[in-house]
Amino acid sequence: MNPPPPLPSQNIPVPLPKKNGFFAWLSKPLVMVCAMGLLGFLAIAAFIGIYFLSARDFTPTTAQKACIVTADELANEFVMTVDPSAETWSAQRYLDGSMEIDYEYDDPSPSMIYINCSLSVDASVSDAKYSFGGYWQGMKLGTKIGGGASVDIETATHIFKWGDASRFAFLKSGGSRYALVFVTRKGRKVFYLTIANALLEDPAEIDAFLQPFLERFDREHF
Image 1 (tube, rainbow, N blue to C red):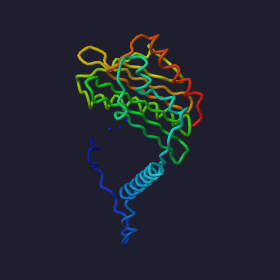
Image 2: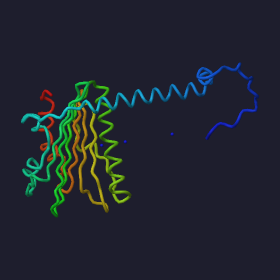
Image 3: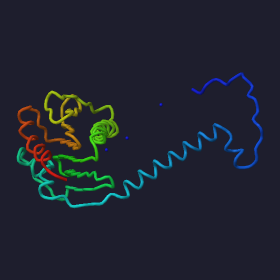
């Protein structure tokens, strides 16, 4: 895919002995705190910059691509014509050994079928938990920005569950469902999926459709 100032104190402070130059500036506690905070922020920003600049593109293997829900796979469930030019793939490995594969299908035809399927493998389980929450919150923010008040999110986790943690939802417009959203985490692996304008609603059909992708993702080494 993303918290009123305190009332002035009536106590008169005791003035500190004067110092000259740079050290006098640093002797002010508030300035020191601000400076330390700025240095900390710059250090974090530098780390994030190095982290993302270290990303290396790679080409997913056939087995890795088989873990992704693509337009060709969806065509086995729906009568639809797949336009290869509407597909976008990206894959990156990062400095800490984590990786992400992202697939998007944005059909410009009147069918307007849309798919976004992403896989990530994080360096640790705790990182994967953040990724899991990030995908979900990113979806909610994107839906709010893109659809505004006209789009509702119908949480339906009972429809389909998998892995150590998962969330399932339908997106609705005008009271009608038009898209499904699913995100799950198992260990260090996170799987995210949105499908719009080609809707599966029956729990048994959803289970039969998603299980093969998730099982392959679970087995695959990245």
